[in-house]
Image (cartoon, rainbow, N blue to C red):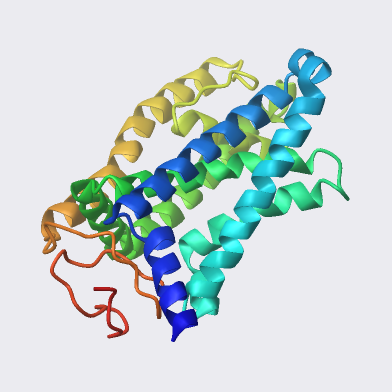
Length: 273
């Protein structure tokens, strides 16, 4: 009973921000994450690394140990550790500490610690910015609902750039070293139709330049298509949850429950009171 009570208390502090202790823990965690990100960025500079490299080394390993202990505690207090480990935040948490240990075996692997910035997404839950969570969930539903239309659109664009690239290869291939092969011409078509315009490959013939102008104008219309698809799905979707709490289910590690929820809407487990 004492162990269960301790696990319940630690779970409340680590996973939830409804109590002063939980909010303090999460804010302190965000501060440590910001410090770690700044250290990784400064460490990439040769001037700072040469002068303060030893300090960066000790700070990074202290923070790595703290994050490792935190991750182990999260697994311990969760009733189903595997579900938490495979959840979005669980994967981010383990990826946030692995680069430090991989750095002992692989050179420069520690720079992948910049992925810790994803952990700052908890700020929406900590400060109860429920409207942002709801809007993010609505955007996610819109993307899922429009995946078939977007897949068809990408398939059509792929065929289009292959045709345009092949045609430009026939026009420019003999007189332009940039269009040395069809794959290179397709690369040019992708860069042009997305209006990126690196300029590393440019057509030299007048007819090729005319085709380029058409492709550029066509690019604006193509960019608008996926935007319209997702926007339409967002207009059709209705957000039914106006207020969310910071409650995290101990059984399935899912969050996004209503403020007055007693049971988890995903697995039916009872939430912390």
